[in-house]
Length: 375
Image (cartoon, rainbow, N blue to C red; front, side):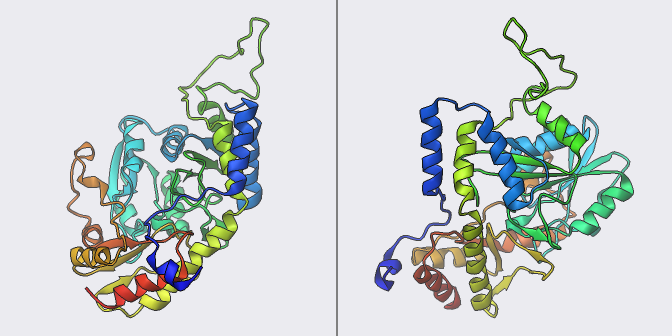
């Protein structure tokens, strides 16, 4: 691509990556007319394990379903409390309410946007049942400390890894660390199935329960068809219509072919941003520890005078976005938690700049140049 052409292309904030192989697989599946949950869902689950090291992934129709299912299998119910950060998408908190439990918001680390284990401890009560760490932007939380707290107080951990497919914590892939991990395959995520999600389960017992409860509580693997034509079953727990279908799985399988390459590209763009913006006046980069690797779904920075920053970039055709503001501002959760000191500062300064595989070198250079000019 020539420098002149790259410079004049519109810069997108997000970009949906659909590989040619995904188009091929989806077309083949549609032509087969076998589009409900079947062999491709099983293959997608197997490939998530084989290619990415995920532990017992249960393919679902969304990450919200995955979070809810994880909480349900954990036994979270009415009167229980679940600790989570306010720095996330509203779905994280709604999944708690879906179990008639109470979301309890703990403060974040100001230099990562991730929940602070020290703040979690302060929020634990006799009613606490689970913790939902959210890997903000794809950067792993302090999972050793969080899982140590969970073990000490006999709590379930359901990681919200909607941003974090491909992230690594201390040489372990996110999705192979805690009791449960929820992933998103929504349109603009690293790996898309058009829409979808997965719940990873460390325990084979949890895995079997999640597999059954994703489809009305019916164990499809072990429920035989009777001579009357219906499966023979006797459901003992509430189940849901959360399963993934073969069309979504076909898209996911196709996109898995170049996932590693695309992830590496995103991480390289993030490296260039960090290298070139490290000493910019009025801007602070988030922390990046050497013992973990971010999936780099977002590149969030902290800036002074955020409105002028966004306006300055917009004047040059560069989008910038506060992707998610603190969710405790919503009435459904009871309103702003005044004790989240770091969250308040982060919420006032955080903004993200474009990070996706379709960014050209010219566009990256332009973004860096405009930011370094000041605002």
